[in-house]
Length: 244
Image 1 (cartoon, rainbow, N blue to C red):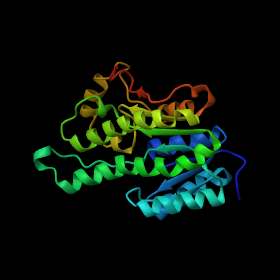
Image 2: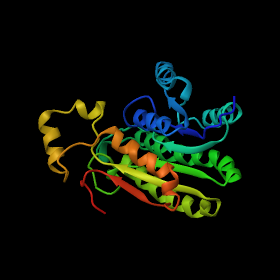
Image 3: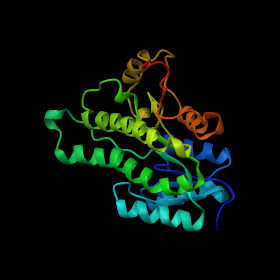
């Protein structure tokens, strides 16, 4: 059934930052399709979203899967008007020990998936003369981090890609922006020792980790009409860890 609400697609929506983004967009009145990589994650999303969205199984490495999902969304709910590219993984290692497979996988999941998903939604956005593409980058695209050459390169690539696409699509009233989170309290950071967490906090001007809702709030703004004249930019949400 086609939705009267605008349709938003959030990848990697089953936990952490992605879950917060999806819920905030629901609160903002969107019909949200959230993706997960497991059937359990999809079921969790469908329960959480109730009548305000749905969950979908997607491995963002799978180009055919991306095309099939977007076709299904368009046929069942309508064209995607807000795309949030959030799905991601890490495979950290010093470059001397990093395998080509780990380099390629990070670039595929983070950068190639953003290319594929963005390209796939552009036709519907162009027809509507409206669209919001919001790519989740990272502070490591700006601050060097040992052991994350692959991740840093992918995130920096996302930002450069976003600027180019913003120039290409601006005349169609499609905005393309990035959000670069700093240290955010998630399941991953909760597993760190108290000593490491303190050292990380000490690097942040606000002296605390951010919350997933802080990123969700930024997404909400960039997706809104209030941000209609903002495109090709990187919004840093890091508590002062990095100041551009």
